[in-house]
Image (cartoon, rainbow over all chains, first blue to last red; front, side):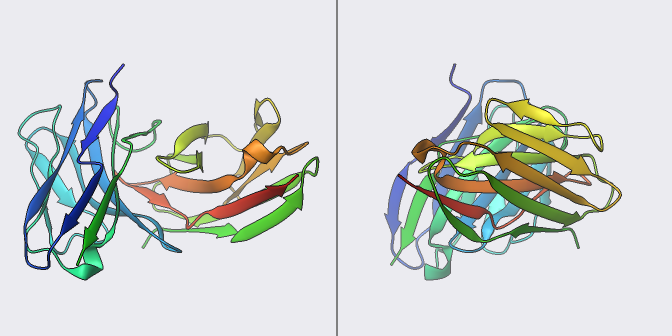
Length: 113
Length: 109
């Protein structure tokens, strides 16, 4: 069972570069989301989607874009990387919207130098 | 703004001890409260609670929700070194899941 797949697992970027974190799920979940996790801050919601074609901002959306052209995929784009975006990123999915068990990807460790 | 507060922030106990982790919340349109265990990688699901007063149990772990006082506790009895992890509480509200900062539990052999 693939579940939620995130790539890449590790990435080092230079300030100002752009990149896309990929996320795919094979459980036909409507709801997908991206979180970042920083020491002492817990998991903070960046963007989320309640279905294909629908996205919305979370708690910390600045500097990130998302799109949801299919149910399976929910890529996260960093437009111009900054050192403040050094973090661990988790993609997650669940049936319907929040209230159901949420499944996490393995995480992507991103360092911006 | 939705808020989830966990306490204590960290806890160090000896193997065999019993621990209680706390989670209080303020969330609009509460749907459920979830507990996760996070070791080195992604959080893994422990419990989902939706109703007050009904204890959920899984082995040595148990959890209960109080929707009147807006909190939940996670109990771990007879702790083992494999219980060392960060325990995350999350509350589902309007289309969003809000996480607490977690409690870091360390079990000393």
